[in-house]
Amino acid sequence: MQMRLRLLLGVMCIAVALWGCDPLTRHKVTSTIFDGVPSLPPADQYCQDYHERALLEEKQLASKKKTTAEIVESGSSHPPYKEKRCDKCHDKSKESGLIKPRDELCFVCHPKIIDNYYIHGPASVGSCLECHEPHSSGQKSLLKAERGKLCIVCHKEARIATSMHDKVTSSGLFCMDCHNPHAGAVKYFLR
Image 1 (tube, rainbow, N blue to C red):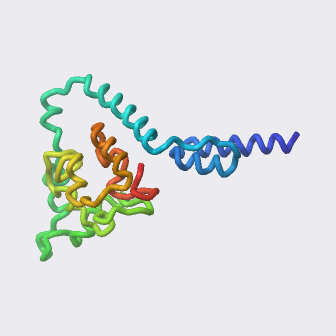
Image 2: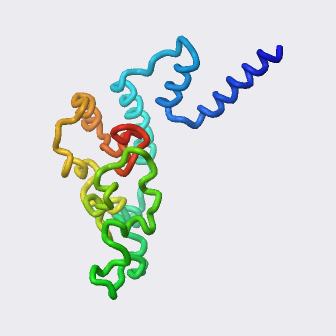
Image 3: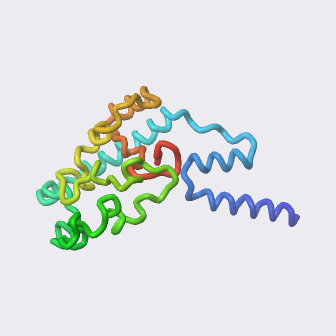
């Protein structure tokens, strides 16, 4: 009786621990522990399900009308710049004009931006300005280009799973909907 109780308690602990994990991690753990766990759907189906959920959320958000102020605010400004706190980044007494070297500057305020094992090249060497504007941008998140056009500035190589990527991008999703642009816990920075 105690053996069954311990086994049941162990299974419940594992279930609670896995509750917050992503589907891939949950599947790896459960298929390691238990026999007969069904396999994950193919990547195309998984992305299709995600796309359908994203479109539904987008339609729900679009149904709410934007005010004129919200439309004007569609771009972005770096808070220190917007608040005229230039000394948060700039030091006129230094030759570079910055408080830290350019490749270390963003990490002063954003130390946890790289928080995973796989790191995007520009982020790993502090080249934040490859993708972001330092002061203000017409795009959200201080991006240099639209979300749908930013990654292809550098990434001109053939995509792995090209047909899947073509379906996803033609459906209105962007690279950043599936890939974390700074770092990720899994290969290719998948979310």
